[in-house]
Length: 256
Ligand SMILES: NC(=O)c1ccc[n+]([C@@H]2O[C@H](COP(=O)([O-])OP(=O)(O)OC[C@H]3O[C@@H](n4cnc5c(N)ncnc54)[C@H](O)[C@@H]3O)[C@@H](O)[C@H]2O)c1
Image 1: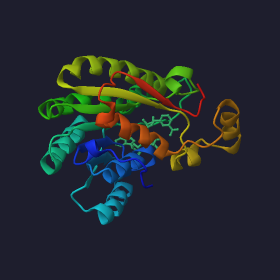
Image 2: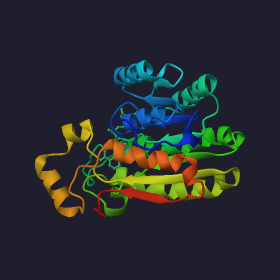
Image 3: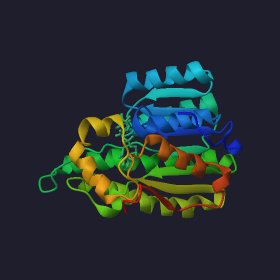
Image 4: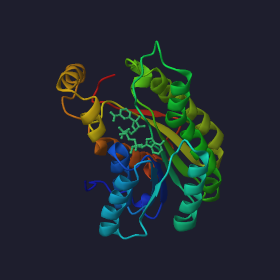
């Protein structure tokens, strides 16, 4: 989707996005490339990521977008991809901690292994990626980190105890990083989406009945699209948000 707003301060910025191959991540990759950024992203889904990269390379040239297949739960993969990003694009100035897995588990029988596996994808990479890019952002004179939480961290939802706990953890992590990195002019904020209509949501969870129930509860009776969320990320990453840090932004059509 073509962006209607242009942020001159984003032009030429180096952006790293986790889980960028599909859904909201895909919209983020596209939106930042359209703003003139050099975007690098990691995702488990190699073929889908390559296709997105090829599509954007055709439109914007190969210097502007780089895809690395990898698993964010493996700290070696994350470190290696960040090193490659630095070598090809330069120091990362904008980090988007988007990756997640919203697998449901019955809370009464959730195993320790599944609990830790969920935190390993939904919480840990946000901390380790932020820590890894900190020196790059500090050297650049500042930067922006955007974490992806969820309204589920506040209102809860069934059979998502580990996901919801991780998403609540990201709100606390945002506060801590904003405090600890603020002296280097690094801003850290969180986005809390409501139910965003992606392919995965349509295929797995968004039944007509569930969508009707959602629509009964929200103020704005339209679907939330990945681009609605990407638009907020662009603003938060830009210099227009230069005094905004440690905050959370809800995009849920008025559900909360
Ligand atoms: N879609 C929604 O309704 C919704 C609602 C609230 C919050 N969010 C949050 O917004 C963000 C994006 O949501 P989405 O719906 O696009 O997510 P998604 O689950 O559809 O996509 C996440 C991406 O991460 C990738 N991925 C998963 N595990 C990985 C791993 N170990 N290593 C590398 N890549 C991995 C997937 O392949 C996928 O491309 C997430 O943080 C999510 O929790 C989404």
